[in-house]
Length: 264
Image (tube, rainbow, N blue to C red; front, side):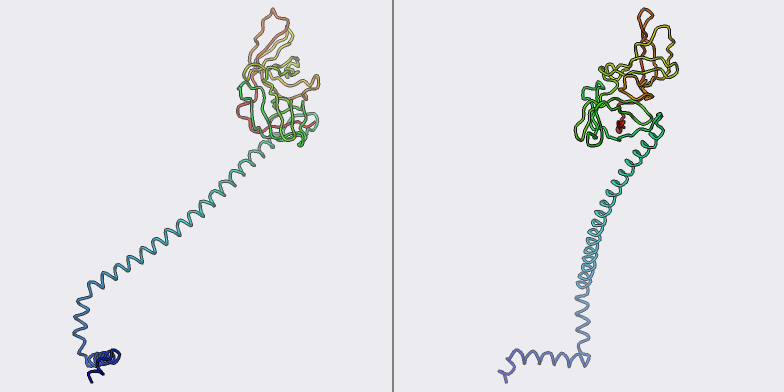
């Protein structure tokens, strides 16, 4: 008999049977109640810890979701900014083209739109570089203008994809011009910095401040009617053979971004 009770499996079954019998008789309620009272504080702590732990997991999960959403929104925002930037560039280009439609000319002109990609590093206003060249139809000696029929210079060198433009402010620049109001002809020269003068104006002719200087078309280097600037003041004296006047350019060369090459 003692050997029978020493068997672990049999002993376990017996203990379980005893507990089942005692529970069915209601004799375990008091011990259960005491056990629950003793363990309740610990269970409460465990339960609260479990709730907080689950809340922490949910919070961390929401942070991760927010980070993913933030990354997605940042990507979308960058894409939108890029699209807005492109639309602004297109709008500026369209406005530039729209203004150029009003180019005054006796005959239709074919224009090549180009971007300025470099300029005279000396700051003397001699030349700039554009991103269009021979493959785009740009030729040497072609006139270069800005929106509104404003003369900027002339192509002096081309490669396949780029061109060098001599500005009208270059000291070596010479342009046959005339005063639009009086039709008096003269020769426009570049100077230091962004200065322009017109000389070889005949003596005895009235030259007034604010009069408009345009290309005359003589010698065939520039088409006629391109706007150069306005008379700022007469700087010659009566003892000279001809009159000379300082010209205020109508173009702000420091703010140029896009230009037109007149296609020949």
